Length: 377
Image (cartoon, rainbow, N blue to C red; front, side):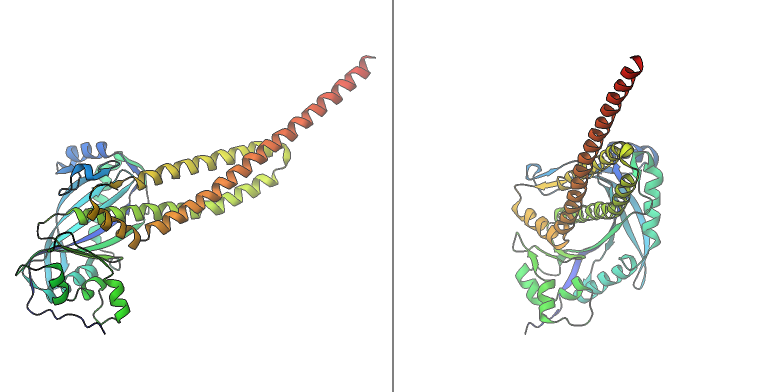
């Protein structure tokens, strides 16, 4: 039986917990316009994002996201009020990722784990914390002109990243896993888990150097990064943004399919004389929807391409698998296929209805010619 390691006297000297909440803010965001509006109205700091520790040729952004410094906010975490820094990262496909960075220094490992769980209870998915809504409303008010078709009730995703840059002594990833128990931090559970559950929680582990470590789960991650690089955290945020956007398309198509069936039935009830026009109109609408969603999904898929950085590519692929982005994307593809098939059928019916109407018109003209001929003679 796998017993949890003992924490001993391991102490976190420098660390932070990042609470992420992502919103589907709009159909699209004009990042250049948003940057100009932010500089003009908020007079805050902004920058186009890139991965700091990764060579530019190793990754490729479709359109680098825009990072905005939102200043400091106050959170009631655990024993009292804590001042944390807030930021936003805007993606051109309509997602905004809000981040609250909570300093977590000079804590025992048990206290560090407790702090992570307290932050999750304060601002995590189960908490409707007003801080998120306040920050989101501020962004909407300042950047409204840069938003293409803003979303009234946006979908959301949450993620929690616990990062340690320095323990009280140098430690390798292997030694760390032997000395501390990551499961309570990654699972949020206070009770001991079964062996199979523990293996599942710790399944996605990655290291590049002996002294760094990344462990991923569905809604949390632990990062040991003594060099202070934020590339892994940024990649995890990107994967969450892609998941949220795919979920948005999936729900949009879920709502569209019943409407499509209703439109088809209504077109059938209108009769053959007007069917061609209604079939053509509905077919054009469905074709536009397919083209629009296909274009957007390609933008999301190409938002970040990891090429030469094998380690970062492995972390990114594991995150996409863990977040089940592929499953949601496959569901979107299936629904698009249904709509494409419906479009093809409607296009065929419209062509058939036009042919029938043409035949009727020809018969009428022939009959009219016969009548006129009889009248003349």
